[in-house]
Image (tube, rainbow, N blue to C red):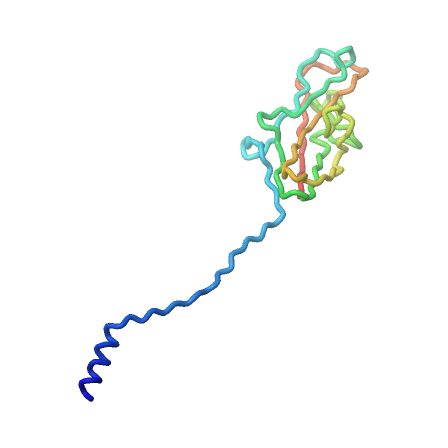
Length: 174
């Protein structure tokens, strides 16, 4: 018997025992609504959407009026989001105030301001009123351009020569 027990012990030492187990791993991602602003530049720590430049003119009461302007930026800013995300854009009254859909360019504190209007379309038919949010929904493409157009109507008075300016704060929420 002792001989057989030794053979069984030696045989079990040389036999290979293979074990296996299978497991599952869950894989997931949660896609949340979100957006990013593309095409903006940083200037001294302030994000700039560009420049609305009405150009140069000697008079604002003549045949060259009204003056139009569109946002100048090497890359037109756009909002990239999940499709069907709602957003709002709002433009304040600028440094020199504004009411309804009129804002003002100013040369200095004692000069008469030059009124101007902002629009969201190139035909200048859809005004952007002061501090009134305009809502929209991101299309299936996931991208919305953020154009800005301006117009100075003919003026009765002739303003003094100089650089008239304003600074607007644009608020974009989603």
